[in-house]
Image 1 (cartoon, rainbow over the protein chains, first blue to last red):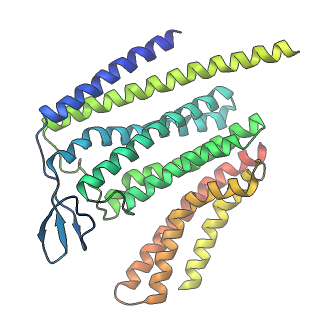
Image 2: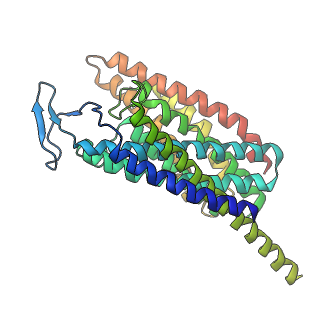
Image 3: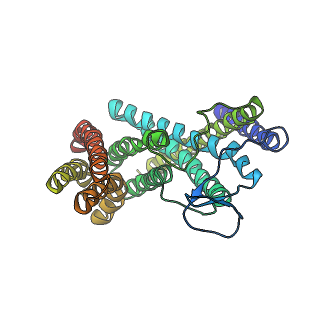
Length: 249
Length: 95
């Protein structure tokens, strides 16, 4: 119960922080130009072509499309982080074989999946506004999509095993294998030339950094709140199941 | 050059495929679960192998660099996945 109270407080505070970051992003953050994308053919007519160079067309960006940075990046980083927590609990489970770690790993995976879906949605909105297309098969997007598929596969795997101990072990093993993709997806834009921007390489003004950090902290608070609430629900569910079993005997 | 790609690619598929197959044998919808687990995991290997094979078959400017870039991708994938599978196989067998 105490944890639930903490979770509710964190949920409210996290919601307030993300809302504050939303207003800061639109009112105090200065607009920066992160460059333009060059494509070889006109893909979309929603945004006007800026200039035609030797490399191809250049799309102009609506200035507000970069505001998604204050939501997309914190959500994406939160998804990697919570996925890491899930893999950490999976390793703990394999070492100790205690069931609580398996439940924690699953709950962290569920929380991470929420963030992954949010990242996908915000990312697609941004690519539409900035590149003129909804989706492109470039390294970051591809590896992130693979990560999404692996997370969904984790739940498919769990649901198709009946034996509880086996389900926990296989789930933990697959969570660890799936997590290998997360650092690859995170660092791939720095290794392979990619049209996905890397914002933190060149540094940024504090008016941009403050709303970003506020949004990041808010997202992590909301994530922890979701995780704790689901944990509390799961513990109650397990107690109800235990009572049911005891009544049947 | 093509046998090299085939060998390196097969090692990767066998390494992680054995682990996933051992897991999916004990599930309800065996073949379907194996596909769901295997296809996303195989994707990076597949991309690197296709890129290397394309370079080896078509040739032309920069094909050597593309070939070895693809081979590097396959080698990295093989090393990571074989290590992970080697470390985790014991738990899968034990369950």
